[in-house]
Amino acid sequence: MLTPLELRLQLGLTRAQFGKRVGASIRTVIYWEQGRTYPDVARRMRMQAIARHAGLTKTDKGPYPIRRYDPAKKEYYEGKPGSPWLDWSGQKRGSFLAARARYRKLQADIDAGRVHAQPVVALLELAP
Image 1 (cartoon, rainbow, N blue to C red):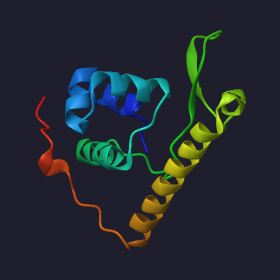
Image 2 (cartoon, rainbow, N blue to C red; image 1 turned 120 degrees about the horizontal axis):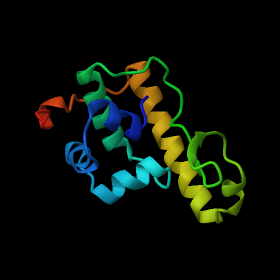
Image 3 (cartoon, one colour; image 1 turned 180 degrees about the vertical axis):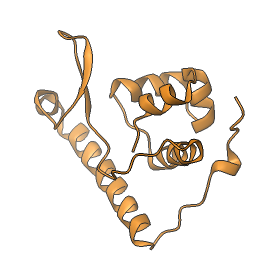
């Protein structure tokens, strides 16, 4: 699955245009791109529909990547929960794990055919 930043850049959209298509504010899109928060399931499905419609899908169906920002190198990297994970409070860890579990269950149900994802392409304004 493409990250919000990858999808937005490949579509050539501004943050405002991308946010309008997926139903999020500019600030929310910025937080997604910085790895502070993650899109909820409904918005992730909209992004998948947009990517499929544009022909930008990835073949792997791995879990949503954990993106970190390294201020020393001034770049983003993907990885497993590291020291920032250890600094999180129990509530923040719990909410992250619960959201990840909900996403993985929904993805497994879609892959197994138990849930039929409704196409949202018709609901989106795909014209730039």
